[in-house]
Every structure is written in C-alpha cells, then in structure tokens.
Amino acid sequence: MTDGDIIAGAARRSGRYRWKVCALLFAATAINYIDRQMIGVLKPAIQADLGWSERQYADIVFWFQAAYAVGFLLMGRLIDRAGARFGYAIAFGIWTLAHMAHGLVHSVTQFVVVRFALGLGEAGNFPSGLKAVADWFPQRERALAVGLFNAGANVGAIVTPLVVPAIALSYGWRAAFVVTGAFSVIWLGAWLLIYRRPEEHSRIDESELALIRSDPQLVSERISWSRLFLVRETWAYAVPKFMTDPVWWMFLFWLPDFLGKRYGLDLKGFGLPLVVIYVISDAGSVIGGWISSRWIRSGWSPNAARKTTMSICGLAVLPIITVQYVDGLWLAVSLIGLAAAAHQAFSANLLTLPSDLFPRQAVASVVGIGGTAGAIGGMLIAKFVGYVLEATGSYALIFTVAGTAYLAALTALHLLSPRLQPAKLSMPAQPS
Image 1 (cartoon, rainbow, N blue to C red):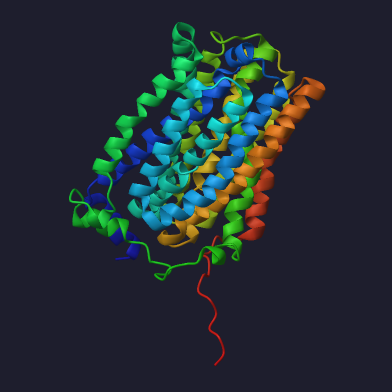
Image 2 (image 1 turned 120 degrees about the horizontal axis):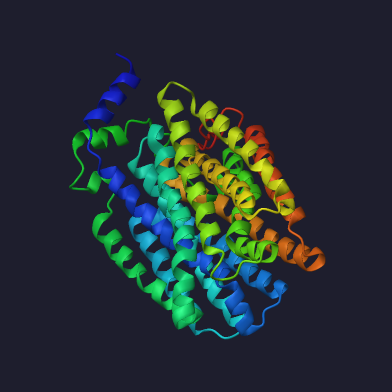
C-alpha cells in the first residue's frame, strides 16, 4: 500500500470539522469585501453629496491601498507570532470600527483617514485565513479550501449592490456604513468561541488530525523575517500578486462607474449586472481550487496542477480587452464575469503557494509580503485609472492592462520557481 493510499483512507475515515473552520473564513471574507466595496457602490451618491473629482476619488482609493500595503507586512508578522485566532480578531476589530466611522465623515481628508484605518485592519484577512488553512488542511485539500473561503469575496461583492443601495436610498449613505458594520460583531464572537489550532480543539478526532498533519514538515525552527526576503519562493508569490491584484481592485472600485458611464446605469440599475458578474466569479473561485486539488489527488505534482490551472485562467481573461467596444450590456457583463471568474480561480491557486512552499510558522509572513506587493500594485492602478479617465474618458487602455496581466504574472512565477519546490530557509553552516 502506498503513502497516497494511506492518506486517502484517512481522508475517508476522518471527521469534517476543518470544513466548519473554512465556513468561518468564508463568512469573514464576505464581510471584508462588503466593507471595502461599499465605497465603489456608493461613489455616485457620495460624489454628488461631497463633490469629489475623479482624481480625489482615486486619491482616497490610493491611501486605502497604501494602508493595505503597510498593514499586510505588519499583520502578517503579528499573525505568525500571535496565531490566527487572536491575530484575526485584532484585525477584524480594527476594520469594523473604521468601516462604521465612514458614516461620520464630511470631507475628502476625513475619508482618507478612515479608509487608511480600514486598509490597515482589512490587511489581516488573508494572512489570517491562509494561516488557518495551513493549520487545518493538508496540501492536497488547500487549493479547494482557499477557493471556498476566497469565494466569500464574491458573495460579499454580490450582497453589496443588492443590500447597500436599498439602505442608502431609505436612510442615506452614512447609515449604510453603520448598519453593515454592526453585523460584524456576530462573526467576531463566533470566531473567538470556535477557533483553535487542531491539536488544541476538543471537537477534532484522531483520524482528522492525522490527515491534517500528513504532510512532512519543512523546518521547525523560528524563521527570521529578513530571511524570507532572500529566497526566490517569496518573490514567486509576491511578483504575481503585484501584477494581478490591481485588476481585482479595479473591478471593485470602478466597475459601477464603468457600467454607469458606458451603459447609463444608476444606483438602482447596476445592482443586477454586478450580481451576475460576481456570481460567475464565485464559481471560478471554487472551480479553480477544485480542479488543481483534483489533479493533485490524481497524481499530478503541485507544480503541474497549479500552473496548468493558472494558464487556463490567464487565457480566459484575455477577451476583456474588447469590453470597452461592446455595445450590448449583457455581452459586456459576460466578458467581465469571465475575467472575474478567471481572476478568482487564478488567485485560489496563487494563494496556496505560501503553504506549499513554506512551513506553517512562516505562512502569514509570506502572505503579508505578497499582500503588500499586491497593495502597491493597487496604489499604482488607482493613480493610473484616475489619470486615464480624466485624460481620455475611456476604459479601453485600463481593460487592455487587465487582460494581459495574468499570463505575464504566470511567466514571472515560472521564471522564479520553475518546479515550485519548497524554500530552503536553513542558513548555511559557517566554516569553523
């Protein structure tokens, strides 16, 4: 009997508590995306009330991204030291308070301040979630688990245009921030009550724990933060994040504006198109994680499974280059939805790389470094989009950049880590 047969048998006999943890991560990510996307959905109403220019809005997005970049580095290291349970709770509390504070501000400067605080807190979501996945799932299940909890981003993006405009139209845009923020307290209580590491949890049986710990451990000693910057595997994760995360930020913060300007939709009208786009992207997140996980279970190497899936995704994004020239709303929605689904499937595989390549005690730190790279890319795309829109009034160049980013990112990944082999973190012995 092979090791694979033994692990497969353990999977059949084991409990399923790890999937409840995944459900908590899914819910948190949905809340995370409701909170960050609301400014894009409410942009027309807030812009009319406060008189923002396109460049001022881009500046607000820029400073959110700047905080997100700083926050990823800080939160990643904090979560590796404090653990996912308390690290996530701290991050969640910060972003919830900042989100609710949006309802109290009256100027661009004040918006910059609360968006900066929101970015610091929200930066803890993915380092915490991916560390929890590394703690609770074996390698063969991680891409699926990541795809499932990352699908919460799309659910949040679906809920936002359905619920938030109704609150804003009834009670004003300020109330929308306060009301949505209040529901976050329920999740925070559930997280602190339910989450523990597998070895410390009373609800997990021995067979499930054996399955979770079936992968060989890479190293056991503490890893210095500076050491992570010196290995290629860190950059194999960070460079593709820098190249692809900005596309998703552009979708979140500018899709309502694009649909309004190109197809004449307003606060009441763009809800259904956005819902369709994010429903399609939700499927992409789950399918992308499921495909590579299935291929690994079938005997493919993680390298082949991850990169083949990501290649398919890169090709699927390309048609979005044409969307500016499409006259039919629903054809445009289909093209954007396909690109968003491909992004999420690509990300589900990219997000597994820290746990594929690094030991558990370094995962959140590597995620933080990659998240910072992605947020810096988001800062640049915010300035780029604001400049292009004021200069040309067209999204054509913006969608061209979006359509070509993924194949370029995959090329960079392959050059930096041709075989996706685990990082060699042990320092060389000094001569005596």
